[in-house]
Length: 133
Image 1: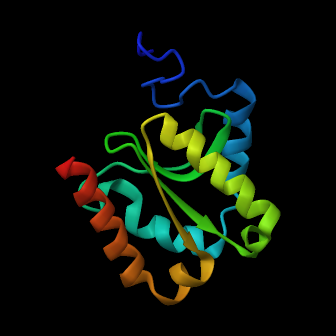
Image 2: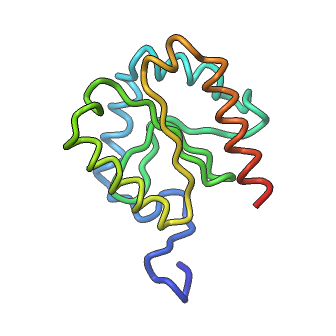
């Protein structure tokens, strides 16, 4: 923990509760086709040589993809995220994760399914921005 800010936890899990790890395991077994498609590019350090984890517990949440080395979270949002209520929750979630010093980027299922090259380019841009900071 950062002594200046007791809420800023530099660990990979940022204080995730134990129950989150079981839920993450279940979610890894139920990934959407779009999550699986993106995972095929991110797994085994295939993407720019970085290690990504899928359905990873961080703080109070389970994020779709996470690279600890970069502090980068990638979320793939399905139709569930189109409601205003969920968008407000997602915004608060992003604020909490960014408070932890993380970068969050979001894509829709449709973007991943139909524009995977654009999605990958945007991820590279996020990586370059993080590395240049």
